[in-house]
Image 1 (cartoon, rainbow, N blue to C red):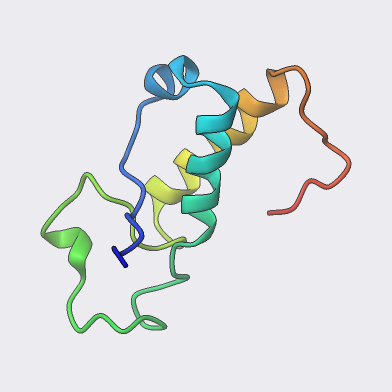
Image 2 (tube, one colour):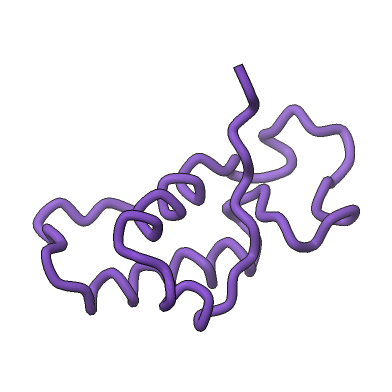
Length: 86
């Protein structure tokens, strides 16, 4: 079984072009990221080797990506906002 891919860094423009289903999938990938390097199995920080991939929630790029996706989804129709979990 292949490993789950980590989310890549996407600009707000790239995110806005995605369909709602793709955005929800991206949001799921963001939520699956590990909290911090210290709480992970990594010995060294993989973000130092590849800045285009998001590994940890406690990074600015994760927080920006998460915020951007939530803002875009809030503007979309047919999104149930009653169960808005972080």
